[in-house]
Image 1 (cartoon, rainbow, N blue to C red):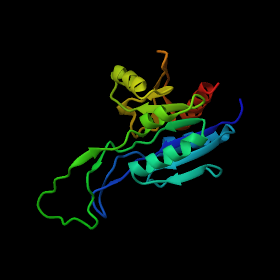
Image 2 (image 1 turned 90 degrees about the vertical axis):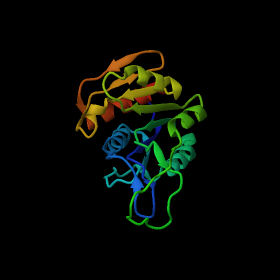
Image 3 (image 1 turned 135 degrees about the vertical axis):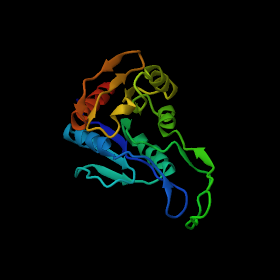
Image 4 (image 1 turned 60 degrees about the vertical axis):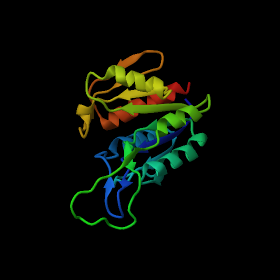
Length: 209
């Protein structure tokens, strides 16, 4: 198999409330870093778009640091055209404040935030992809939510979706099921993130023929 160009996203996004506070999540970015390492080890060119986490990235990986969902969207849409596949492992915040304060809000009384949805980066990238390109996403839902994951695969026009049950969040291992547009399901045994990353890179490259 010839070398491919892989675009991988990892980590959380931080959506500012004011100059100090933000809305975020507990994503560590470790799976994305493992995917980048696996892609590099397999001989592929890897670009990693990484949210605000302190994590080691292998030398040889092109790293793009971002903070917000909008910054991640710009980085993905700006870099995807030059890549063969996008693996969207980042845990992008679903909501952000409609308006962020330029200063630090005082800690007085109650604070009410008006939130809006962040852009659906993966869906946008899938709609913009060329016939030669592939998109891979993740579905973090409780066990038993297979149908919702299949619906997500179809709604976002993905070439592969990793159904990763919510119960495995922050676990050193992953028990995932790979879902394909033709209806195939590939249940995987529990495995460490490095082992899973190697497998997912292989499956992604196989999609490219």
